[in-house]
Image 1 (cartoon, rainbow, N blue to C red):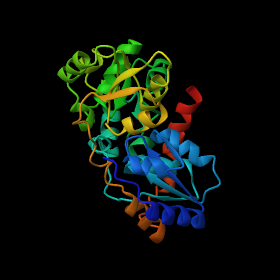
Image 2: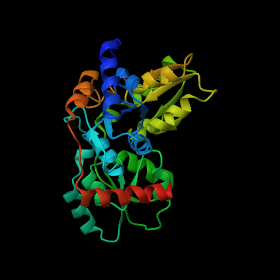
Image 3: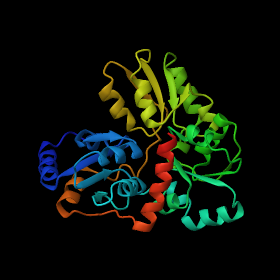
Length: 305
């Protein structure tokens, strides 16, 4: 998905970034050229936390809308830009705050755990947030036998299996990870018999069952760096291979499925980053009342994690 380097465009972005006192954040699923120009590359929560430790006045978040919202939640007083306002997350949009409130009315004693891949309004209705990396730990630490988990049913199933807890799951899912099928893992293993297999916990249970490990994107980055890993089949959005190749020369990485492409992650380009810095738009904001409640759910997660 990467394009040839455009030195002129990159220089203009870096010049304007300095003038605006901005930091550029890129998710692991962004185009290669976007990752290359970013100050930090990682997962959504990791990036928002890194931004909070900088002195930047402006955060350019190259990801999808809920990620920019998370940055706004954790960085009040700073301007958060999302270079393409239409870059959304289908899974995050599969549950609304009203729908969660209705579910809570049905289970008033339940603890609500919400995947970080959710809107700020949904986070605000939650007791805890979690990530794909710490979901097992967060849920495992909760004593309440009644737990509502939203919005990803497959991550929720993964956590339930690892913790032995019974979770009430919302029927959301990631369309990109759903494109990775069991036969993809079987076929890649036949093609690369020496390779290890890692998949994301957002994948279907029958895909996870065929992998050596189910890991978050940050977990995959660490796993790939292990000295015993020489060849790796990777079951998540294909653009993570850009970072894996870049950071691990001499190793081989293979996409579990070339169909695992998130079109929303590909909406942001270098041209759009430059335009965003020029116009200081589109700005992502979170109403203060929602921001405070959403941050409380994130803070409870961080306290346990």
